[in-house]
Image (cartoon, rainbow, N blue to C red):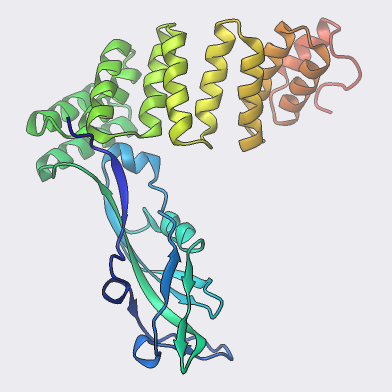
Amino acid sequence: MKRHLLIVLILFASLMQNISYASDDSNSQEKVFRLDEVSTPPRVIIAVPPRYPLEMQIQGVEGRVVLGFIVNKDGGVRDPNVVTAVPEGVFDASALEAAKQYRFKPATKNGEPVDCYVKLPMKFSVAGAKTPYDAYEAAQKGFKFIKVGEYDNAVKAFSEAIKISKKYGPGYSGRGIAYMNLKEYEKAIKDFNEAIKRSGKIALLYKLRGDAYSVLKDYKKAIKDFDGAIKIEPEMPEAYFARGDAFRNLGKYSEAVADYTKVIELDKSFLQAYNNRAVAYNKLKDTENMCLDIKKACDLGDCRGLELAQKAEKCSGDTVGN
């Protein structure tokens, strides 16, 4: 069976065809040249695929961003900006972040490297069979229902999308999210299974399915899914946090501490990671680190753990709120 993998297509098969050039209006001392003014155009040496926002992957939203920037004489990128974007504002940040990491062989004029202004299109697309527009529209209605908490109506909308096209992954992923909110976890798992088959390896889908397994207390399957999410998206704090909870529920407190620690490395303001790590430290009889974590949680606004610990005379010294 053909695997429908999510890909980001960067359109520069031929730089001469896909990168266009235009005048730059900057007042820099160094002249910025156009394509028709240089002897050889810039050539891509390092191309970095833009990151496809997870929410957009789940919803099946596709788009295209055209960037403009100056390729410096050293091959770096200067002053990237969005020229056009469809839909507006959705993929801009991802495209700009990727462009800053591009490296080029610079343009030359009379044998010398020069600055050159370019335009580069980036396309965000879901691989696989083309989806009927009616299926996309039905799914978008479903996501709107989810945002306002109308989960029964969301299920109906996503079911309509699936009826139109059984190959449309976002129909299944959206309905799975709706079922999660309706606490119908086994139905959610079935839909996430189908979504992964149709949409490919999307970290959030694995994480959501893992959440459903966790609620059903099938922690081993949950951990396997969180592993999958982390493999795809290594800097996803929510996946580490959820896996830490699963390890903690299995009594694997050292593994839980390691995952909560990773969450905090990625996001030092992730309050609940400190609280949950404190619980794991307590189970490991590591009172010193437990106290450090609940004091940090108190600094971030939740002093309940510190209050309980002080009443139990476990964490002395600092007073609540200090």
